[in-house]
Image 1 (cartoon, rainbow, N blue to C red):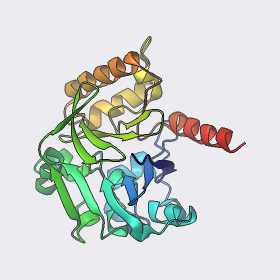
Image 2 (tube, rainbow, N blue to C red):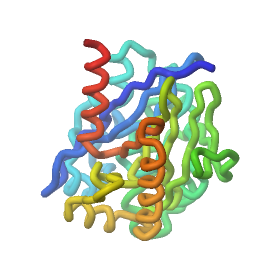
Image 3 (cartoon, rainbow, N blue to C red):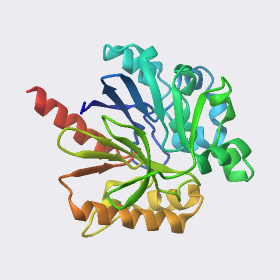
Length: 269
């Protein structure tokens, strides 16, 4: 079985009003048959025309609009060809997760069916705010997963790739079709939990905690806050079961992202 090399990228640094800096934690998975991107962060078109992100997002999250931070530029900087990105797997379609889709127009774009329907229909005011159709106006090669055809450590899952194993793990709550993405490394699994939580203390198995402004923000933006909390408790249970086998992290926690950077430097030195 071919096991991947995984690069951790911050593709949309943000400085929310009244809060600590946030990252947009994306993964570049290098496999024997091509590149896989988990989330995209903001894209080149978002940088050139930030108005399309919407005034609420720009005012509250204050993203860093730097072309060098986009996934397509970081992939080139790592020495890879962006045209080799064959699959993009999205935790969900919020603007800070799907903005770079147009930078990889030939890639297959994997999304859960409930998320795809919510983003295409945009029936509620909240959905109209969180989803930006301009980010997929180029017509991506959608792969919509409407069933969980596998299981992963007690969770239903939709398998995207084999060898290496990469699966989509439904974690609804933040949005209708929100999911995590599980990636097998040589000695452990990575679970990119998307926006299932924002602060690393929320996943603490002994004394879960979250700064009040972050907790209020999550309640405000969640499609179903109660369901989000249910999924968060399931993630804590998963972490209790074997923290050495499964490394769980979220999209926006800068502390978690820095830990992966420190591990990489430790391996180099």
